[in-house]
Amino acid sequence: MNPQELKSILSSGLLSFPLTDFTAQGDFHREGYIKRLEWLAPYGASALFAAGGTGEFFSLAASEYSQVIKTAVDTCATSVPILAGVGGSTRQAIEYAQEAERLGAKGLLLLPHYLTEASQDGVAAHVEAVCKSVKIGVIVYNRNVCRLTAPLLEQLAERCPNLIGYKDGLGDIELMVSIRRRLGDRFSYLGGLPTAEVYAAAYKALGVPVYSSAVFNFIPKTAMDFYHAIAREDHATVGKMIDDFFLPYLDIRNRKAGYAVSIVKAGATISGYSAGPVRTPLTDLLPEEYEALAALIDKQGPQ
Image 1 (tube, helix red, strand yellow):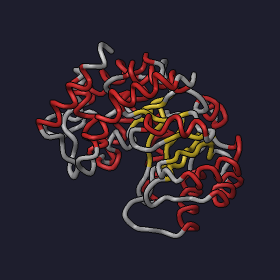
Image 2 (cartoon, rainbow, N blue to C red):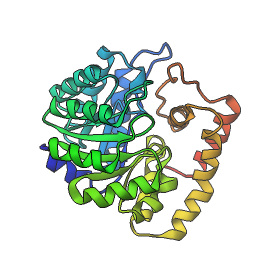
Image 3 (tube, rainbow, N blue to C red):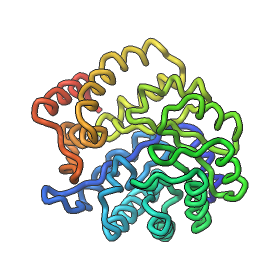
């Protein structure tokens, strides 16, 4: 799959980031991960991102990363494209990118570098180096310390033909509009704020109809139903689903930093597809929070 073919795939449909399965001892659980991917693949997501943020990329050792990407690529070879999360320092990100390409990933999501703030020029040089280290398509994720402007993204697009996507995790509407207007159809655009469903209608109005769903990990039918309601601009259904599920869900998610991942792992356990505990420094939901989430999920009906 060349970068332009990937760009076309990512320009419509729902995306998701499967959890990474761990044992009770915190080790990668390959069999559980295969079971998860086989469950999720038929629901109709356009692509799945292995070892993304929800997949706890930041907690994986290099050897585990290879196992996760290879397992995802092999399991989904005939069902859904797999893209791989990459990140960290420039040299680390290049090593991950080249390994993911070697293992057969169709593209990459370049997550922000970590901890150290950097100048715009430095971040752009980082993105360019990763893009030029591979031939497959790359999506850059504007979030936290990665905050590229429209002019810099335009320069990167000129220098890196395989930079085919932009994912927004900032929620800066002015910046999003400026990027969308300046880059036009050069990129595919993805909504990437945590619990993106809450912002989906607003982003669709901005020309960003595609987003990544975390709740797809435990209520995939509901996630697809919501996406289709957004696509057909069924505002009544969208509003009801936000009121009945997403706002109460956010109330639980927002109780602690890091719960954006922890609540998804709890949801998967409730739905019968446990991915094990989160790794530190994340923490799992408290028992009363787990029970509140279970009641919410039960109301969604069979998946």
